[in-house]
Length: 170
Image 1 (cartoon, helix red, strand yellow):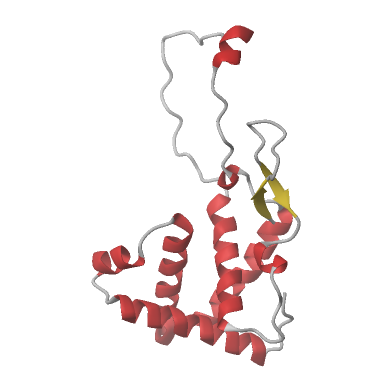
Image 2 (cartoon, helix red, strand yellow):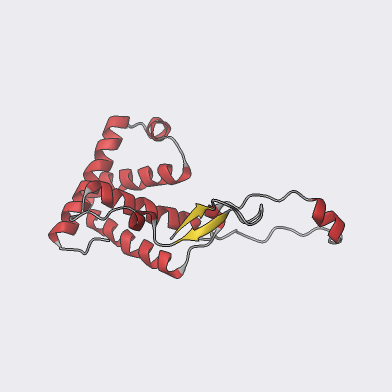
């Protein structure tokens, strides 16, 4: 499930709505698993994972000040903020989809595939968070071409294995 911006928002606070199906389901489904289709599914699952609630850590210390009460006039003067679709918690169906896709990462288990799995996870993380792949490579002492080649090799390996195991395409 993805969130789309409404063409005509009902009010300023409700500019986002849930669209039917995931982004990958809204596009055309290929006849066999391709690297591009696997990549799209992995990114969709990573975006769902990114929206999961995280543990906030220990409770923050309270304050000696009493809570402030606001009346209707105060609330009416506040600006309405746009809703960010990443703030919505994922649905059960989305979490099931995410878990199903994350099982594919088990294909990359073993010492021979460690670098591919790490590159794929780093690539998905930087894609979802809007980071720079080049900055990630500089930080970790990698060449961008090597990083991209490892990510592509991992995605192609997953696609080959899914086709080999005759996994239904969705």
